[in-house]
Image (cartoon, helix red, strand yellow):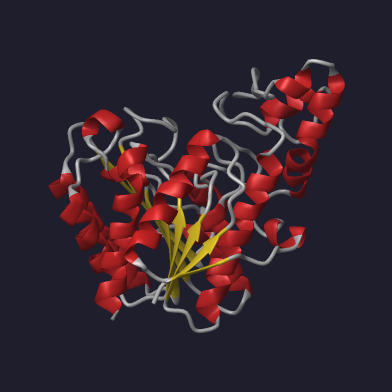
Length: 334
């Protein structure tokens, strides 16, 4: 039986609609049980994210809204970034410069609800991971905003805290020695890759659109296989434009084989709804039965598994698609 951790502090309407779409479908099918997570200490976030980035994210809205009378009605959006040859070790005093230092794009605004939404999402992910350690077979962190594009010290792609990475790190801190992250979103899971790239205790596998044709553009090529102690522990399976469900399932089978070779003691799945959409919506054209099949295949791996909701569209189909994966997994386990 799946356990779902849900805390609705979505940052904007799109995030709220994603959560409500999935929540409504879960209720309609009566799948699993839904619980509210316990808050986790800031120290737990520092295991994955840089303390100075967390401090900035916590205080950014207060600083922005106090800087000028009109700011409180406007989101704070980065407009300048420290690109090649620029230093990132010294934090600028000007807010706009610090916002650029901690952002990878201009598509990730800071608003009044950013920290609360991101922090409660992190709470969900860590609680979902911890539940595996106390006997749950599978859990799902039903939360927004997404997190898999957020790095150790930057936000981006609408992501602020990397929920999947936080879940994996908690499992390690709670006694496991090997954990895997499988990213099933249309966009490359650059955040977890960067966080764990030099480490051998976390295997990161990502199936995504070729970064030459899709964001995050500068990460996710097949030759990025890890560095230092982590060589061989990062696997990217980029799919070319026009790839369909057969290509996606072939990549999933490759991912499953690599996961079996690594033999993690637990698996974290970053589950993005957009991977399932038609090509017009930035996906690989999977149909309804494919979602059930994907969940069943993941269940046959036999690992305690925490699912984490990432992005996804179209919203009308998101709830059905995501819950099909969960139901496929749950039925296979039973």
